[in-house]
Image (cartoon, rainbow, N blue to C red; front, side, top):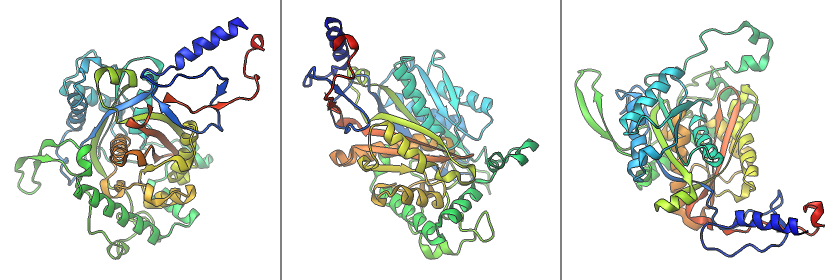
Length: 457
């Protein structure tokens, strides 16, 4: 019996919050599937986000970043997260960059170059990660997991895509074996055709899709007009070349250039299907091809407190799941419940959702499938209006979500970021508002002693 009580004292010592808070009682308690998530104290080992910044998102090949090198784009955001927090770059244990379209080794070298541009010493390592459209979010999850595991104390998760330089291409040489594996063959489907499959299989109409596009532009335009994006966008001074005269000039870009405030159903209805003759996916109700970068600075709560850094959000859970490649857009409908459950929550506990609008068809389907309140989803617009620089989208969403949760205060505690993934997957992560966690009571009393070791009975 004495051994059991000593073990319990050790366990309780580990559970003591790092900030002053009511002490836990020695009552036998457990947090399980049926335990309500209700925190009233902060844990020093929470993985927190202390900064999240991005460039503006610009149209590929004709937008503000068409003449900007990819490594410069990344360098701007890497520099911003350390400068704005006064974190010493040499303290960063790793930089993980989500990026998709560029050849892996070439892009990894460019990202390493960007770290030097941003002032990081050669002692700070960097790697890239590619899980298609979720790469930026995967980078955040990877850094959070590494800090939790004790590999390092501070990490940066970033995302980069320059679709001006690296466009979407088909697989150059296909293994003949795909002809005998239907789902392997479906991995090669153009993303636009998977959108058509979702619309046809699940009854998402052209009007549903066009309305989603109009709503995205309307909300994004309102957010931009009210200055909401200023909390997450860093102004970038770069060069742009006039395609007709060849004259180069210096410009500063601080706003997304794909938002169309006057988008309307009448104009969208006149657009022809982009991927299938009798289809419903058009250039107007699909995400824009874009250039952009974002970066997120993570560390343990105890270290953030020690450094006096404000906590923007807390990383709570992550899930990646597989779905049928032919309808890859349904990924969020499978990934969101998995991530929410992993956080010990239910869907109705989530106050805000950022679901990537790869295509309006899959976006509309996922909202309906999960029975989400549209007023909680993409409240500042999404990729149809803002653009979708593939590897950067996850990092962009972190800043957009957490800043909106901060503005809403006590009315917004938990948020979810999710996206579909080419070749048939979905990813999602749950975040908690940074100023909302304070001493733990997500526990319930256990009526029997079945959970105790035998020598304590």
